[in-house]
Length: 59
Image (cartoon, rainbow, N blue to C red; front, side, top):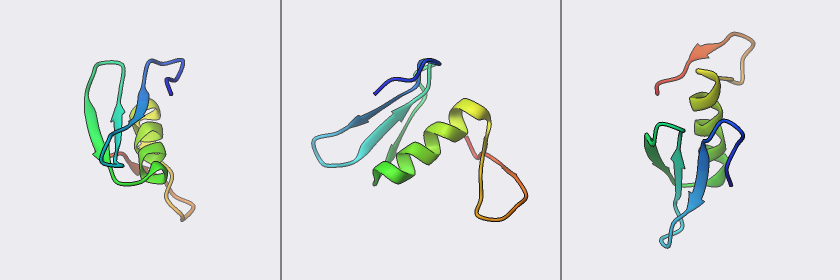
């Protein structure tokens, strides 16, 4: 899948997920859930935790 911002998630042959942003910076994730979280952090610059306050993305 590719987003309007140019990021993508691709499933690899070994079952992992390759998450890449528009600048071709990529990370492997072991589940689709983790890949989608990584993608959101890449595109928005932060990730939503389970609490009410925000934390900066590590990417």
